[in-house]
Image (cartoon, rainbow, N blue to C red; front, side, top):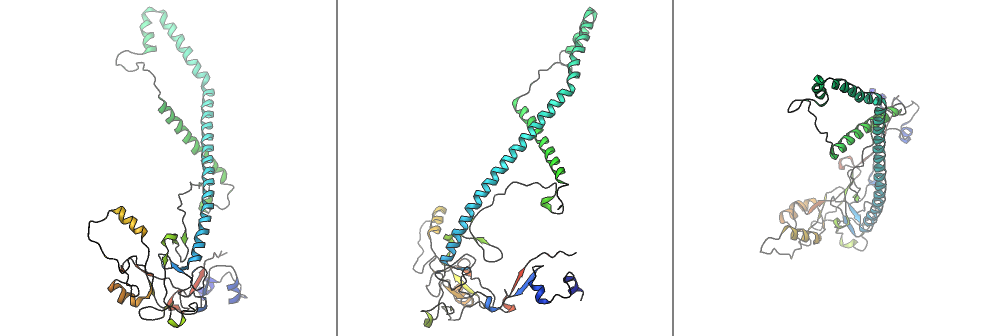
Length: 367
């Protein structure tokens, strides 16, 4: 009773379960039936049976036409985003230059104001010192004293006159420090002026002390958006997929269910299926000779293409493919640690198979 009241304490007692689910308030969960699940051989973009199927490195299957169209549209969006980032960077540069110029003007105003306030005292000191020198200079006995008072002792004693030197680097450093101090003072004044204008003080980005930092270097690239965590995807990294269908349904494979070419077991969302991605055909032989360089290995790896792409069930992959290290269909060489990818699959409508619930997050403001 307590838990139910804590979850629904802002809802009226006249609300029914159906009406509460229809509202756009709070988090919503919905169980998904078998009719809403994608088939194992269906495209993640068009949701139809795949035509010329390809897969990414995570095992997500697409029609080749669909994924190429998606990558082209993503590249167009990336170009537009790059143009906006360049305009933002130019605006930031102008803002920094404007702030620097304002800080420099403040330093100059403070310097001029200081000279104006202390000008009379500074001008009076040389005159008083000259009068004192004349008075002391009248008496020959005090002539040496006058010289000592003005010029100071000679030799290695303290107070000897030294030549004033100020190089250009020191001047630039002092000017830069003064500009930085003035810039910090300007930012503090702006934060103080914003304090009374921002009612949403609890938001970290809207606090008076918050400053808009520089744009971070974002690596713009095409992505595979299937799953909770999207990952980078390029056209050259797409892997071919070859499903095997029963002999009686080769003419119309859109209504048939793919099978494992080794054991003829149906492949569906209820079973794990493995994609074999070998780049070494069966007739390839190892050559004896000197080991190739790293550059030669890299060039050869870039030029290699996937020659297998057959889909088998997980049982055959564990009992036949991995121990024998070759595909049961084309006999291509298989590396168990690199050339085996589990295909992505959705649930079956049952809770035990997973993927049977969809959730939408929402914010519920409690009074």
